[in-house]
Length: 309
Image 1 (cartoon, rainbow, N blue to C red):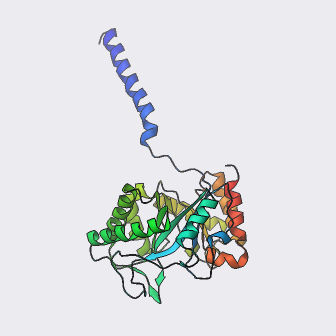
Image 2: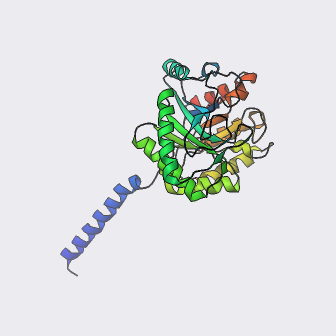
Image 3: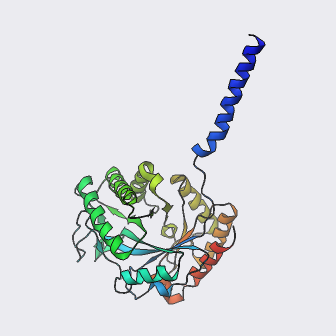
């Protein structure tokens, strides 16, 4: 091979590797870093808690999540195939109160959560008649509620299923896609926990539509009460692997009934995750339970998140 041919070959290889080097960072999804996001569920227990009761640190991104909108009839006795009704404490958490808290705090957004564990006296089931009919009804009914309440996003918290994982994935995935494309919501989250049936449904959704899901509100408080710091870190890493590339949030339940409690080292675990650039935010279940203890752990969570990374 002549010197000229060798030079051309070297130039081609150099250009090829240079192009690969320059383009590769944009083609690989970067791992999420620390975030100042704080989220809190509110309104499920009808104990008169209001947005204005909850301390809001101006140096965090704050999401209230209204609990719940459910596709059951208003009495809570029969599923309605995607026709959602409001089941949160709408007397104390009304459209005017949403507008008021957002006007007072520029860092606050408000979402609604779909499903939840129970409705009336029984379990709340995801029970679509068909994918297309459920999606059509859900888009219509939720767009109406979201616009009436001036909301910003949705959270998916179905915990009982009368449909297979692929049906769940298609229904929820198409719902999120449509609401985002229509400009009705700016973010969406899911709220799974460590249960085989629950995980099979949410992991199917994640596999097909994970790119549309902004946050994973993993219910770490559904693990056993008395969870240790090291166990919590291991659970967190396991679920971060399951929901690969997702912003998995740390979480606690404010009545201390499960998982790693604030008294037993939750904030120690959060500091450790933060030191590893893995604290993507904190969420709490719930403002309703925190009211009686003066929201002390909400204040502590937000102070930790607001500290420079």
